[in-house]
Length: 310
Image 1 (cartoon, rainbow, N blue to C red):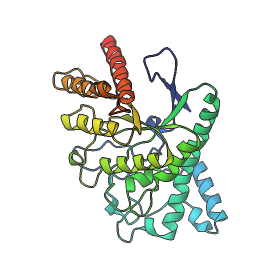
Image 2: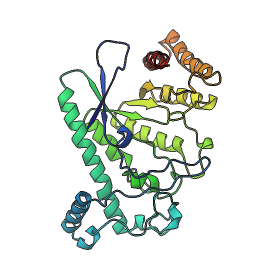
Image 3: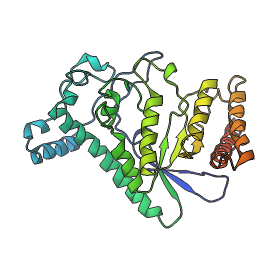
Image 4: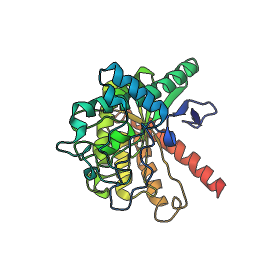
């Protein structure tokens, strides 16, 4: 288990702790190992159920449910890591194995193992810090590739049983709510128009935020782009201000070599200042101050660190 400690405000006291839940700190299986190619969808990834421990759990579950032959291994009609969902039959929109009784059996088990893993870690962290007035957070990935297909294959291999027929994030968000944990959600700068065909970060983000609103889970936002564009900053601002303060904390990521370039830094400062203006009218926008203060404090702190490193 990885603990990442972050100052959430410009204070000498820790107010929030982020708990690493998996690859890159996110709650997911390491289902994909190839970066997305420009203007091209990445492969669907692969199920991570072939080590001896997962196979043992799968075998036991299959026997307990009266289907012992289903516990001999994972699906055999799935694409490989870098292949499209149509290469084999499991993820096909019409007649795919994911919609069969076996598909539901396997996907339910596979996603439940991930949720149980997250619950074990977050429950331990929540109980450990319950007396310290420290907010515990965990991060979800935004697996938006192939979201517009019915089977949502990239989400399925990552461990989220989310399809056209099923909201797979309800159980995940319920687990966060049960442990009184904040949910960190990246990709608040992404627009569908800049993504490959079949992908939809905006739709997926809206779906997850809807579940968070339903279960009363607070959200911390992050960006995903290496270098922001004007539309991306506008999308971040929209996500921060909508939903009656659902997203009340934001961490600006990817502050690399391009961050202080003449092309990027003026856009970033304009973004922060536009949020800062909300402080001027607190009666009309009660959530504005909380959002802006967090963004500005983090921007100033990280910019200072970046300059020191340089």
